[in-house]
Length: 382
Length: 188
Image 1 (cartoon, rainbow over the protein chains, first blue to last red):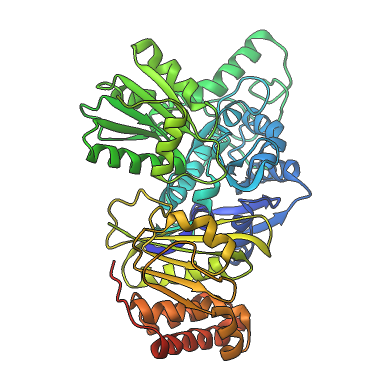
Image 2: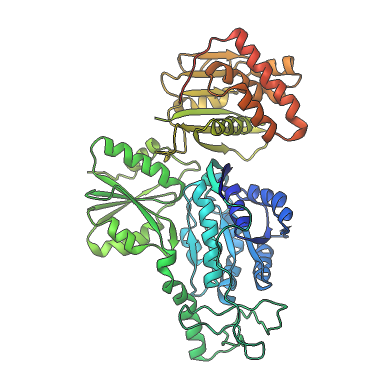
């Protein structure tokens, strides 16, 4: 039975990980993710899990990649500067199809920026942090309840598709308390790996099933020959430079996520029917944006809002539907235009006017302050 | 409309703990509470701010940050000036710690100006529990949370070493308010 607790976003994420069956957490402290680490340090060992502080973020992410190959649900949590250090191994995890969960609580960047300030500047970094082309999944919660729910969904997606999944929190949600419904440890419904169906002698660690393009996963110590090969590899996991091997591998890493798009991509729409103006916002800023939308509606403005819950992949169909009645789209985000690029790509060819309200502020603006940012950007509702 | 509460001061004054305890107690009472925190990187000094948005039920919970506080508690002059604009023109209650605040930043009605930090030191034995002494004052003055709920919250959420002294701080604050402050019952 779920119970209601009064938790911060970070505590809720930690609880969700435990509910999902987390066994290994490896981290390196950084604001605003340190308190998640601290909370798990106290709690996870009581359920038989391991919490370990690595020498840096690079070691942290590599350790959890190894842990998943040994059969453990594993996670790390960080913020921008640490996430940048993890970039190489995000690609590594994608290539060896390690089902890791990485929490990146965005803070004010670039570089070390403002440690205790919030931000939403890691949208494109999340998609393209590592070199080469690969698929990635990212969710962005706007409340403590979603922080909880999305971490469970992250584990489910990671293990279903064998992909690294990023949860893009932000400093505000990480440190905001709200009542949240949580499950007991291990009680969340999370996909368990597809076990090898072939006997050890015939098993190929990167041979995908035709339907979902995901290879069944054998763990170390189960008697199978398991290779985690970051070089271009064939179904056996052997290094190969052959054109068709390389091409089918890279395409599959992207295509397996595309095929499951319906399961992953999600969004919410508010007051979109016959609204001439559509605000697009996500994460904590979407809370202030929705409050602003409500305020403007009270004064008679026909305005609605669309909020992506998954950032990668984006719910493109949901956005197109939400924008049907709108002439003008206003993207509000705490950067100088990142999701804006995606919204422009999707809605630009449909003849919509797309404008940007960039919010560069270490603190979340209230809905009234957000209105000032709108004026500052020269964006008009009429 | 939700009830908006802002508590602000310097880092180290226990602002965040006070906000958490009050929020937790209000959740106990059945309210829906959004409690956000803002602070600078320093553990001492710098700024510290806890916002509480209190709803009767779980509707319209889009707001995270206080923009028009009904209740404001300022424990230090600098943060009072920084956040004075986030207080309604006619707030229901403004509590100022006169240990660190000489005069109010605005011409607010319903000001309670008392030397919270000094009183905590003199009546409880340490200024470190000024935050919970303040909760006693707030608890009595507003009637928002009863003593039983608040004390239960303190017992369950404060580390064992600090439980007894915090209960004492809450009681002394409550008693002090009973004797010296006129109640302004506040409802959500």
